[in-house]
Length: 125
Image (cartoon, rainbow, N blue to C red; front, top):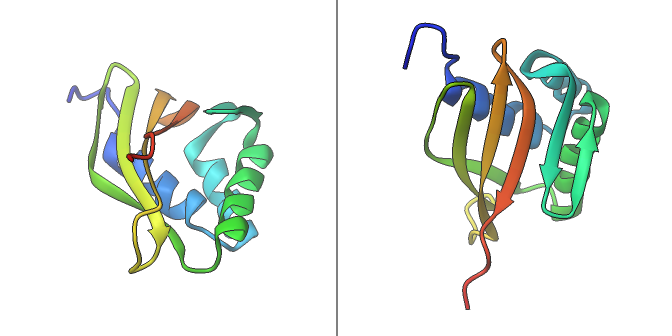
């Protein structure tokens, strides 16, 4: 990692913990403000989400939809270079079976997430 590169693991890990696992909307919005550029874009498999408020709202809606014990957990450490980072994760009820796995791929500009691609693994079976 060059001296100019951000700490991809800290940035993407914080995104999971402080945005996508945060049920308190005020704390989540504060985190989005710290972790994302002013006008970020998030690409989901079936949606394009533009802006900090919209990203926070999507994260809150996911947590609401899947219940109070639903958590995203990183798998290993995020890696990256040249402004692009990736963090693999799994999600499901805390202490329960894994419901979905995927990865967040982020374009990072000046230490903040500019664009985020949420990639979901296909269910096996």
